[in-house]
Image 1 (tube, rainbow, N blue to C red):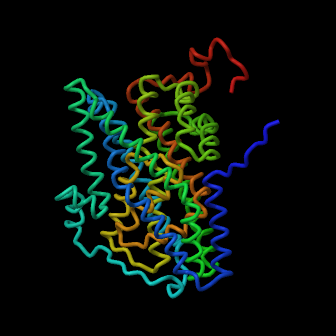
Image 2: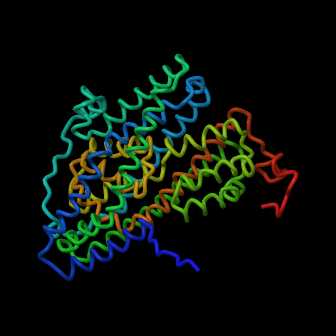
Image 3: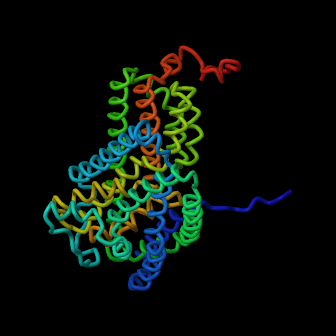
Amino acid sequence: MKKRSLKISLTNQIMIATVLGIFWGVSFPGLGDQMQLVGDFFLRLIQMSVVVLVMGSVIEAVGGLDPKELGGIGGKVFLWFTGSTLVAAIFGLLFALILKPGAGLDQSLLQSTETALSTSSMEEVILNFVPLNIIQAMVEQNMIQVIIFSLFFGLALSLIKHEKKNQLFLDMISSFNHILIKMVSMIMKLAPIGIFGLVASLVEDTGIRVLGMLASFLLTLAAASLLFLFLWFLLTSLYCKVSLFRLIKNMWRLSVISFTTTSSAVSLPFQIEDGKERFGISDRINKLVMPLGMTLNSNGLSLFLALAIVTVAQAYQIQLSLGDLLQVVLLSSLACLGTIVVPGGGLVTLATVLPMLGLPNESIALLAGIDWFSGMFRTLLNVDPDVTVALIVAHDEGELDRAVFNGEKAPVKLAEKITDGV
């Protein structure tokens, strides 16, 4: 009989590393600098490739769109994706400002950090979204400018691909992205060691009082996520003139799958299946919106990033100006385009956006230990709104089978083999 090898998932490894880091920081004070070096080395490895990965992911996602659909269904889908992602970021921002999950830590306990936050006028903030030089933007890791450039590049690529009937360049970018994703996945295998170093150093500086802040952050994230989801369901039911109760019932299975697996990729086949068989969405819209949503519509990540950025600023007692808050919302939204599909992708994205506002990257250790719990709510909000957007577009296009949605009939695929009616 073969012995099963004990394999611990990366998420569990990070959680174990967090616990060990807390124990080390409390038990062996005086080694903070050495532990900090380990953590900083890991963060450097992440940062060296993530700008190119984000650029490639956005170009591939937008460049892969069919230009024929851009002005019709595709344009409508993109507007709903953009709107919901922006609203999610605003939700995260408002909940952080109202509930203040990062407040309460003694600033003297944290390492002093030089911060240079925005003092620019609103006009300068808006102008700075557009890069003067894309190479300089990449060197400075200015993610907003990189993503804006990538959006236009992707749109141009989509048009050229259609005109020339050739997607060679898109295939090259896709292959390059796969290499980068593999590279980041390899680096993420070192995450437990890096997180251990960051947490050990942080706990030595702050003590275990940081745990109260983490609990507060998680509760705030849960409250913001559930309220956002309920209001989004309510808006969808009113817009599409369907029962809110029925909408929630039809969404229940998918919600459980996304919440427990914390994976949008795992949830995608169930999205496509339920879109047709429980919601009555046409194949044309179903197969366009669901895969596109996994890449371009990450409401959960957007809400999480905005909440996390403000929480970190509160923990370090850094005041954010109105211009900074605007950047938080836009950066949280734009960073979700071309979502990084690697283990710990939320942490990778967070490590990318924190320096944009002059916030210490080491603060990622504050949230790394609870990332699996955060991932539950992130994935729930990443997955469910994709289905609602498909439902809205199907309603607008007259391609929504309300009898299927209401459970009055099974779709053709199921009509021949009804089992238990679920």
